[in-house]
Image 1 (cartoon, rainbow over the protein chains, first blue to last red):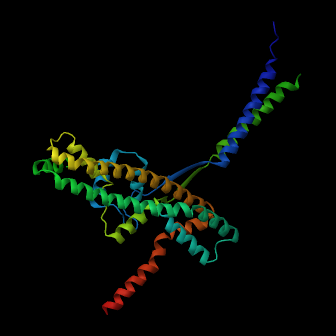
Image 2 (tube, each protein chain N blue to C red):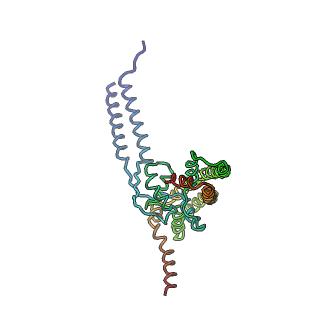
Image 3 (cartoon, chains in turn purple, red):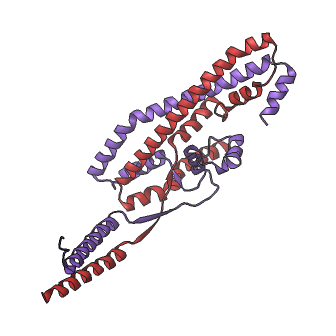
Length: 161
Length: 153
């Protein structure tokens, strides 16, 4: 039969564990804390929007309950409190012109932007190809419509509503 | 052995003080900050303006067409003419969806770039950037109004 440790050893051990946990929780709290982010839910379109009337209507009705990331992004695009990368960079440029950026900050920001240049160029390329394909699909659909007999064309048009 | 209870009491007291310290250190921070919009939105707007291409439905019209034709009875001649066009529409729609996925990935990457740049700024500099967003547009607007007014006078 093994001897159980004295109660005071258990109590001291547990107290030490508690102290360790306190230290860990304190370090974590100092590091991250809790941040609440508020954004004004204003129906303001910053700098205009590429959404057409049909898309905007669809966003406000059909997509109202969707939580796909792209829908959320579009919804954010309609909020008043948004900032584009262009606006951020213009702001940084203004700070730089006013001599409010340190040399180290300029270097680090330049490194970040250099690293993103390829992605930015690719974004423009992708966006152009998306518009090309959209236009081609529109033309293709119109060409199919032209081949269809009137009654089926009317059915197709009815199915879209 | 008499010292043991006092050691335990001391350790527990220390622990309790630690917990109280943690509670006091967990401040709640309230922040108002803008959300980065997808980079593609501005490019899309500019490209559509330059091309005179109105906002589309992302190729959704091809899906509507296919859905409507799913149970339609077509003459063999019409069906033979429609089939290759519909196949081309399918390929274009798939390619479009693939590109939209890539655009989404690039948007997220470029939002991270925005966060990385913002992280380099001090709180005061960051405030100056996002609080002065609209003010930064004022000189360009002033120039435009000035040019138009000069023409009108």
